[in-house]
Image (cartoon, rainbow, N blue to C red):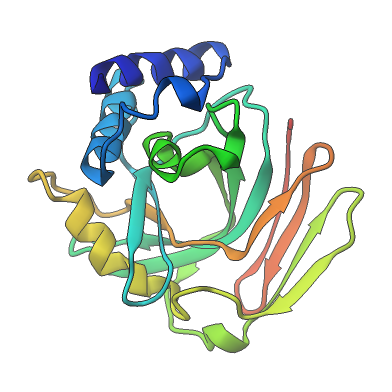
Length: 224
């Protein structure tokens, strides 16, 4: 059943179709199944495993992880404001940048699909937009002001709001996951570290600007 779901989701990535969650609820029994589906899809689509998303409910977890890759032509549900890290050969943060995660689903139910099915679908990822890199340094993350300006929507201006307080706190759990089968991760691998302020739904094109105090800004425009 796991391989059947891999094949079905690969087809969704290729032709833009979506699956009914009710038809697949028994295909993913646990997180191990969900991660096996992720890996199978990524390999079938020839992803490079050089970009990842990771996040956690708190510094103690639970954590979730997923390789990410651009998905051309995907109908977007929204965007997330994030900080991405680029790691060195030892898995430590080397540089950082403003990042926008594009959110989409291969499930007809979208974000209302069961959690394990969303995990199998690469945590509803549709790609990652990256700003200019700068050397990593700890910031006062809890006090950091950020602003998300989306077309035809009021600006979102907040201070702090990351579930781990420090985005780099996700790296140990992510590294254990990404290397669990013996993989070696090259320096330069990118990890986006979880949403600030949750999902920001779109009412039109994914066009706008995300700015973080001390990190600069990223202007973006992609079809929704």
